[in-house]
Image 1 (cartoon, helix red, strand yellow):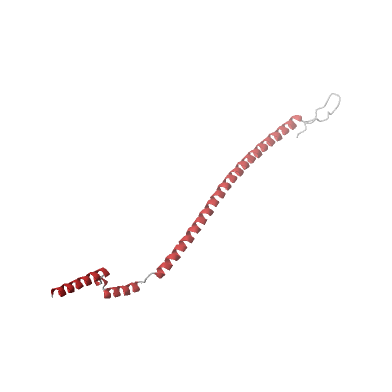
Image 2 (cartoon, rainbow, N blue to C red):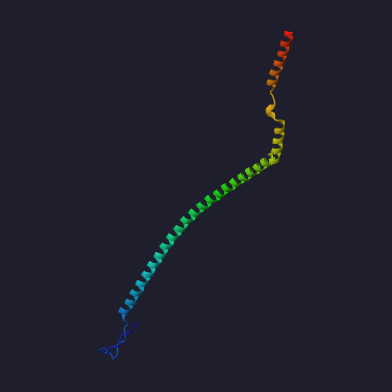
Length: 143
């Protein structure tokens, strides 16, 4: 703040100096303007922070839902894997009980050796026996 130069008065040689209120008024206006600018900036920052907080909360909820879904999917996959393991174990046990290639070849040799195609059924045997008995009976009647 600048003091004005003193001018001699009528009755006194030197008049006491009075402060320059215009400059003080200008300084106060300047400070007031700067304060309003800072307050507006602070308000804008507060709004931006509030929007950011709301966005973070929304994203947090979405992530939590997504994580729950993924955990559920992982549990389902683990269950499916355990079921597949059980099926594989059953399949391995069934394969261990199944006949091996060599055993099937041995059975094939025996079947070919016995030649079951030439076997007769019980009905065929009974028919053959009846025919033979009938022929014998007819021969004995002819004599």
